[in-house]
Length: 266
View 1 (cartoon, helix red, strand yellow):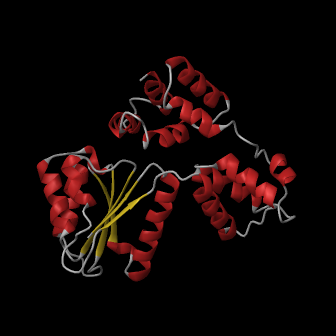
View 2 (cartoon, one colour):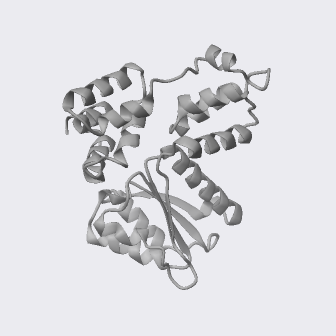
């Protein structure tokens, strides 16, 4: 069985991954879980050993992968395909990008027999969907806000699950609830620049306005990774160029500021 989690919303994707692992531990055992990457030598050898060595204490096991698409050797892909049809193995993959052509089988939801593979996508959410998500996160942390305070918090954190979680952790310590808009300001939670207007400016138009929008976002100290993720999944030229830049960032060849500049320059 394969569980594939993908998308630029790293926070929600990570939370889903953690929930799956926690449920697996609850049903089976922490001893039944192993983590792997696609490193040509150590990572693949460890995975082959995992597949070839059944455990007396863990008849059902979970293999958690990272950097899954980094290696395209036939032997490695063959190991993944072989593991995917075994009833005693579940493969959990969490990646920002969708599988490349050689790994397309990972996105298949057919599975084997009665078992169906799972393919879940986590793209950034905005607007009404973001407000619904933000309300649920407030409730999960028992944080109550006035209506205008919630409106500000939702606007200031829109599309950024990491920042929302960080700000809510601050608000858990506020004694007087519901938390007011003034209390948010005292904690440094302010209205951001017109974020989506600037992001939209980056997606089209002449070069000068694109660079001006990027400079304004940087000047407002918006995280470069957040801006990149918002752009990458809906870049007008297709996701291929954005995916290549994202891979370069992961490999340490670029930082997100350089990747954004490359996108803006076209």
